[in-house]
Image 1 (cartoon, rainbow, N blue to C red):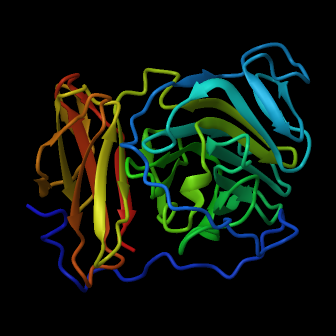
Image 2: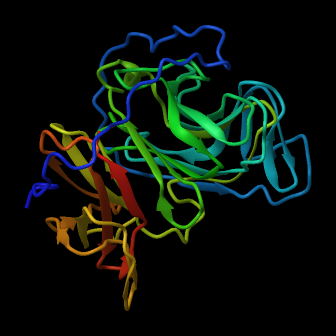
Length: 346
């Protein structure tokens, strides 16, 4: 069965649209990715992982695991605290191809000033480039109201959707996950706003390869911040462990080809997944809650590769913009459910 092949047009209307915003953290709103030879990543095999919960004594030194390449940070109250605007730090031991990798962290969510926190993927010390995805408090009011698919150190957008966007309504914070798909072209931002294991906000930005940015990327990972921002529990490629397999759904756009992917699955094992148009359950099972409401449909079985990455792709029917979709997956090898996904077709 093709993904979402049973969707009928004419249900909920509306879609995420680009916002005409001015990013107050940038002096030059017209910076773009530099032209470079297009680079085709070699398979996106994930390698090293890393983790830092910052649970140590307060210090203006982030410790031997970090290099502060821009600005300044400190450990404060078992969290990372940004001291200088547009600061960026890179983990010294986490090195892996950017394709197929992810960075996660927890937003503190208490700031009421102009701040952002950002995931850094694919940092290259020679070019200074990276995939830079931030969640920002633009207004200074409670909550985060904007986000950006950027490059370098807050250096502006890339491709078609890369750039600065507004949330439909401010979010209080939450667990942030930024990932790049196995092709090395599509970046996904997910936010679990209430820390319940389900990503309430999901958006994707393709175009790393066509923009030329991919050819400037390296193998480093890190964190960036602006203003008096606090964050916690940073990790790359599930370095903290215990998270189990993770599900992402990207390019969920009417008339496009969507991708359902699971990372952290049992290498060589089967992964089952399904979708619902009626809600996210839960339905109790012997292995945990299935986060789909009936009636739901199963998708073709996926097989994970040698590093536990499994994915399938399928067209999204035209005329389905605005329809809500819930997706969930199960790793048969570990008998473990992934996180749930919910989102509207763009």
